[in-house]
Length: 303
Length: 285
Image (cartoon, rainbow over all chains, first blue to last red):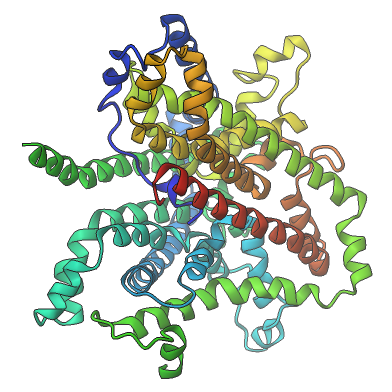
């Protein structure tokens, strides 16, 4: 349950701010209001807005040409391809898992249900570095399967499979964490009615469950994808940092930065920052879509 | 599969919906392969050490210095986020201002921005020649490449946790509470400390615990700004990486066990806090 609350969207902002400002009992004196707004927005600008702005400012510090050259460099393109590959494998796997886990946890009662929910959350509370370390212990040269893998010429650690495994681990809970509370809140009545009326399991899922959870599913997938493409610590442990071969985009940023090639590092970083911004826009859009029917229902029921 | 189904369904209830065995079976297999067995590897690997060896590794002075920094900075950052996160959530729910939707959407930036990008951005911002570091440099205050840099990075990472746990509770709050307090003659400040704060406390504590847990394990956004000087600005996750790079897998694993045990304790605390919060506010999330 732990991280669900923080990843969940809230209802559309600003629906009723004037409700508080126009009410004598809930409004502050003007100077208090100005103080709270001033302090909180200053904090926001210093700690959230400026780090974002500095990425784009630094990326363009040597001009558009240099930035463009940095992101179209062959090593950078290889990093983009590897990042996309890791996400293309990790996201669908965790999507299928998320749906299966949500079906099991939210549609049935069984012994250990709560425990299962907590275990699914586990990767969120594990340091990314440990998320990489576990795969080294299993598949590394001195790991459990290390000697066998070397004998058969299979490379997992310091190669692409290790990067994919680390990515799967860190993005493991995202979809399940969105779907479980959503499906629990919707209840089982619709699906039970469909089944009693003779629908097969697959029909029930496609025609009844999926339309109900589609926005939550999309929301979880977007967050899962953002983390998959941006993961640094876990991937850093298993990658081996071979330029053009086992570098994802965040690792490429690190290498450029450590070579004091700041403008290029920030140029590649600005691509990732844009990915983050697209994620936030999509997320807001999905929240708006997901909230719409609820709002309409409220309006109708008020009449 | 049948035995497993009997175990999970001791009372033998008839289930209306299909797919219980399949979905639970797949969930358990995938969970075991991706999460449980790999994490168990950490504990099994540590078992190859004697207790004395383990203790010597995890209490070495350089390692202890990293606990102090990682835990101390994470605690301080979470506390700072409780104060400013509450003010931000309050502003977003209760006040009208220009650009509010933008601010609300960008609150989640620290979740969405890859940590390596956050790391280099923060060090550019707070370095002696950066936009903010440059303002502080004339006063002899250094942020980047000192323990204060770690604090700054963990504040950034923790922003959404407190805001996003407090915001929904504030939105659900009925104005009747405050109206009753006001009509009974309470000052606004009394209403806040005696009526609102007690209702918000579980959410604030949950946000604090989430930000703290994330901060202790954080790596990417910290290492660029920390300077990584042993005994001064080195964090615990970095010690694990350093040991791995020296092919000291047992050492890395021993420190990882300490961090994992700590994470499990925090996770249990958060679950308890959320159960308490659910009871207090009538929300189940």
